Image (tube, rainbow, N blue to C red):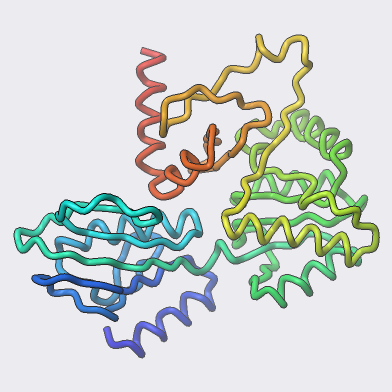
Length: 310
């Protein structure tokens, strides 16, 4: 595809709200058929449009791009067989071709992870939509097309809005609510049949405690939480209501699939939802590693579950 055709495809995907990643070759060392500036688009199903080198790099690039699309995080990928040590922030992969060249690529995800659905007919919801527009975050009208939902109903059908959001495909649900109110809503969601994996998507309060009072201040704080989430700076941290006296006996730890360490599911450091399953992590490093290749670690988790039940 030509550069103009790639740009047109990117525009079409953005208009539809589809997720994709733009892949750009930023450095090469011969011999390789790739060249600096070569570009391709990888869509969510793994289809590659464009050119970033031969078949030796294709599978690695597609897998890395799909991981970036899933996590919403850009990244650098290096495909080489030289003996230089790994560099921080660069994902290293072996070069399968006999030519033994080197390719470095930058992967930038676009689309749905920058989309947001705001529920609520309140001044704070209106201001949140204004801030989203100024931040370049696409506001969707329906839950079906947004991976992130911000609920700013503030007393107007809070429970119904929260239930709809948690039953949707949204990966993260943020709610403008106090901790006490959020806890009561969590209990109500449990009574309505919302399971723990879906409750793990909820982040409430939506943003940091900044003493916000006016609708504009509340919206600004909430959008700070949304922006931090989209930038990968925080993960939703659900508080599961468990009585202190029985918590240790009734809550089973979750085995972190990255490092194998058991992690408490009560107030974990990080939670990530993949294919409807909540994964819990002990540190930033494990969480980041999982988001780079969630399918790999989901399979490790499934295999470990099979061994436990066998």
